[in-house]
Image 1 (cartoon, rainbow, N blue to C red):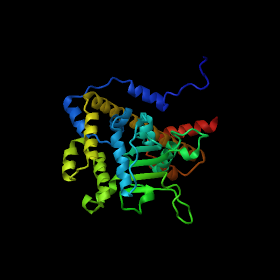
Image 2 (spheres, rainbow, N blue to C red):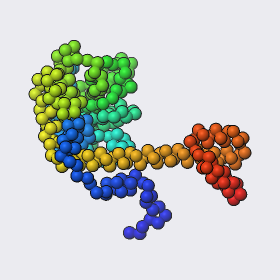
Image 3 (spheres, rainbow, N blue to C red):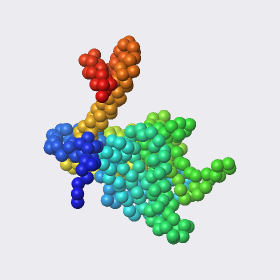
Image 4 (cartoon, rainbow, N blue to C red):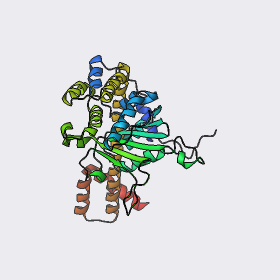
Length: 334
């Protein structure tokens, strides 16, 4: 194969920078550092979520989460989920798109998706809808009888509030399709999405919630809490749901190996390096753009005080301005 000499890989391409960062020697953290880090992990962390549910682990808990949601609206329980897969995401996914990882679960004639998103992401409602829509295609072969297409339930567990749901005080919202004029539900028994906004839980106590919310309330507290606080949360919230208690135990088992926590700490350091690199690159891009505007102003013979105002606004030193004036003169004479 002949190398593409006209389009060589750029050294500052994100993938190349990522390779440079991840190829550095890994650090071995102390037992004390590992234990502290483990206690501060939560199920909203991408890799904690992955190791808790990957490779068909804890399918029964995923079934319990879905049924806790359906109980709110007096819907019947789903068949037991038989298969789950969790999407493995790269650093670039985590950094660029804020992704954590989508879980796809399959039961008889049913697909479910569970997605956790800790940090705010613009237009997340669109992403959640797309994720749910993509799941509709699983277990269905184009050309088959459409009545055999599986039902689909989408679940988004969010560490922030959705602007589209600002009007709702409830921390869990069920979204269904409806005919526009009449508002009559359209295939509501077949397709629905649930958005759980964890910050809204702060406005409630379990005592004021209807009983059908209690199971979901207890499960969500396990999602929110740091591992070191699980026992206190279980006590303070008087958690009795076996599903929530099982979830707490499952998370603790998943993060028990020191090797996992040590790797998570190294990955956190690498991610911070990647974030720092992109922040500096963006700042450099903005500075270069401002410098180009100053060069154009100099070439256009803008008044001295105008150029000086532009220099100060751009945070450019007087010494750098002299260099820009030389560049402007050089460009004008070529």
